[in-house]
Length: 130
Image (cartoon, rainbow, N blue to C red; front, side, top):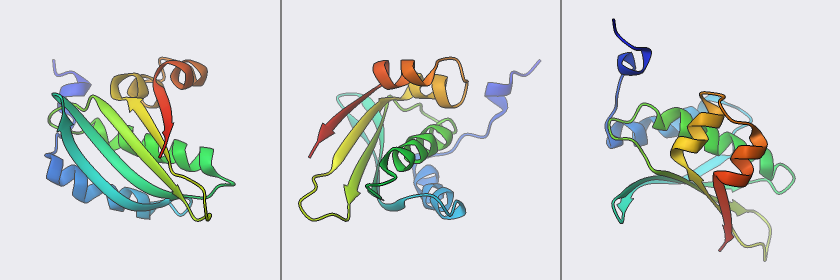
């Protein structure tokens, strides 16, 4: 008997990178995607994007972006360890916010619905300002 997890198609990093902009374009409420990088740092696979966030909707923009990474990341041939969203703002003097999310924990919240938003926010993500 085949498990559902093994029946999902798996894509290369190049394919994931090519599909990501389409994911953002399909949703008219999505923030503007301005950058994308898939790389390895100290042995950890990282899927990172940059967006232009609306300061009045920054939490919605961040939620969409992290959800996009989690949704796309589940189809990667090699699993990601971390998702990174850098939010730039069209506001003079406002620095960028960077959200680092643990990939497995984020999938537990956004895809598998195994943990609550509060658990995810407190235990799975960290913020830094650039």
